[in-house]
Each structure stands twice: as C-alpha cells, then as structure tokens.
Picture 1: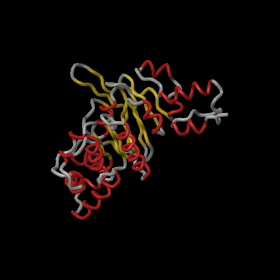
Picture 2 (picture 1 turned 90 degrees about the vertical axis):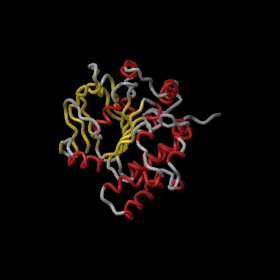
Picture 3 (picture 1 turned 30 degrees about the vertical axis):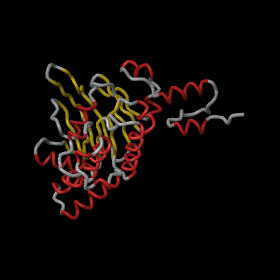
Picture 4 (picture 1 turned 90 degrees about the horizontal axis):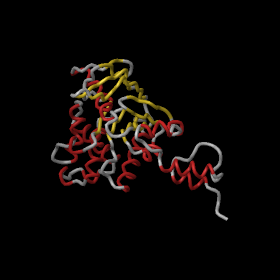
Length: 274
C-alpha cells in the first residue's frame, strides 16, 4: 500500500500544487488520476515516487513513512516506479538493452539475473526485437515503451505513469494501453495521470479527480462520472462514450443498469436492428 497523507506542496511564486492531498493506492488495480493541465497530477506522482520533498505531509509505504535519505528512498524505489511523460527524460544508455538493464544491475543483481529481467520487461512491452537498437534510433512510441520496460525490469509493485499516451497516435495509444493491461494483470498496480477522460472511462477501475491541488472525487468511474456539474467546473468534460450511452439510455435504447464504458460493450447492449 502506497499512501499520500496530507501532502502540501508549493512552487516558487506561491503557487499551490498540492493542498492537503490524501490518496491510498493498494496492490493491484488500474487507477486514473484525472485533472486539467496544471491541476497537480504530475506533482503528486513526483511526490509519491520520492522525486520531490513536499512542504507538509507524508508518503507512507506499507505503513511506514518514507524518509528522504538514502535508505528510505532506496526502499521506496524498490517498490515504486515512475515513468515520465517525455521518455527522453529517462533514456540515457547507448542501446535499449543497456538502458533497461541499468535498474536491475543497480539493485545488485548479477549480469545474468539483470539480463533475464531485461528480456522479460522488453517482451512485456512488445519491444524485445529492439534490444540491440540504439536508443536515439527509436520512434517516439518505441522510446515510451522502452522507458516503461526500464521500470518493469525492477519489478515494482506500483507503476506510476505521467500522461503515458501523450504524443501517440490512436494505434500507439491502443498498443500501449493493451501492454499496461497486461502489466496490471500480473498484480502490479498501474496508476496513470491523464486529462483524457475517454481513456480513463474505458480503462480504469478507479478514478481520482484532481482540482485546484486537491482530490475532489475518488471512486469507480460509473460513480465519479455522474457528477457532470463538478467535472465541468474543473474544466473536464464527461467522456464522449458516456454522453452517447446516456443519450441512448434516455431514449430507452439501452437496458437499465450501469452505462457501458467501452464501445464494444455499448454496441452489444443495443437492441438488434429490425
């Protein structure tokens, strides 16, 4: 369990990025942290990963507060991995395999053990064939997946990703989210920060909505997306598929119950054409 307890953080100029934020991330599951640009999502991920020291509050891992010394941060980084929005902020080695193996080697694993983890992580992200490729020769989408593989090779229990689909075309988004589904299927908690409401609606089993430095809604997508007025006030629109499903349901074209969150489920729920 990774927790934010009362996190407060300010940037120069008096800008409040986090305003007494509480959030619990248990093992497993798919969590989307939603919010408009500048809402505080990225700052929260940085704090949870130990990349910044907040002004107030604590990050707690398995009941023990994380300290910002070598021992405390090493303990945290054995369990929690953070993938930046721009993969070029993360990749640094000459080849893909060298980059992905860096983390396991720094955990003290042997070269053979690190090689095994590297191969496993590259395969999970669908880039095993790029192991010997120079990192600067990769496409943007490939660099994204290699950066994620570098964290997966360390086998974190919780994987944090900041806007993982930014800059990807629709095919790239689908590919990446399928890969992250597979990661979640291994028992790793996958947490994404995004402003893509449609992505969150179809992918997450839990949604936390950020607004003005605070989490103002937290729950299942069906529950969170009922509050259209609050979401609109935060600069967020209901997912397109939910708006469509709601319109169809109001016309009696969908059965009673939760609205479908995926296109294929919506199509399956429609009455047959006569």
